[in-house]
Length: 302
Ligand code: CP
Ligand code: NVA
Image 1 (cartoon, helix red, strand yellow):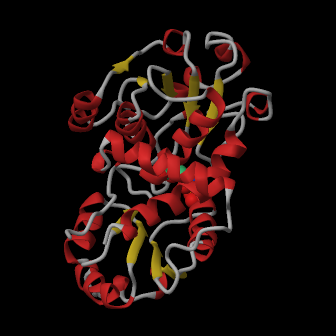
Image 2: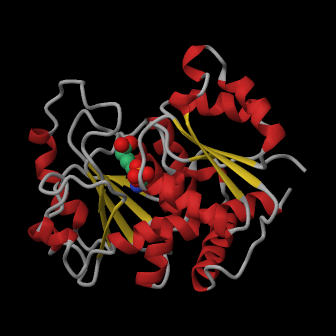
């Protein structure tokens, strides 16, 4: 059987995404009951910082019965010349899957090309597809389903989360709205790919974008690696902040998501993050369940 990778959200068909989300719900209900990966090992490589991704993969892999091998890339030979393609060939002889957080999607593709085991994107500059599985699991729990629901992402629509909301949201049958300031637009190729799956609207005005939304979501205005670029982000992004007055534009009972880490007072206020419509902590928990389901899906097919 060919090796299946999960490099971007639309690597899963709508039916496969639903299968993973249903498995994630079952695994959440029976957290320690299933050990489908007993005797296997999964490498998880970090070329960028992480809290949630690192811990949720390490715990989840162990709960599946497999050995998690967590690798800090700065302690490997990557920085002194070993190619990621060569590393993929070697790791494939030891482990049953490779999860990686990296900067570039080209680097991720090079890893996947060299690997003979499934490769999972744990965040690149282009996408954060594991996060989206957790987000969709949360939407299903809170709203009873995803089909036809309006999901509005406010802020940096050019970043990995903007791209993943477009691709994964449409795959789940949601109507996706992206709203951010000029100069931070989504990649046109990714937008076109998402529109092959469903409806994505780019709406300049944040209040209009939030109107009647079932889900409001945001992310940091400064993604990892952009800290030193000298751009003033606060001025253009502030109108896209999720705060109490924007939230009233959404549907009553709308939920608010944020992948975390949050910059309270920038992209989201305390009152919203800690308020009754926040589903952010469930969303963070669901990283664990959704990733377990994804690994079981990818590895049980082999
Ligand atoms: N949401 C997320 O990926 O968090 P970490 O960067 O802490 O892993
Ligand atoms: N867009 C953010 C997501 C963090 C989980 C970043 O890339 O830093």
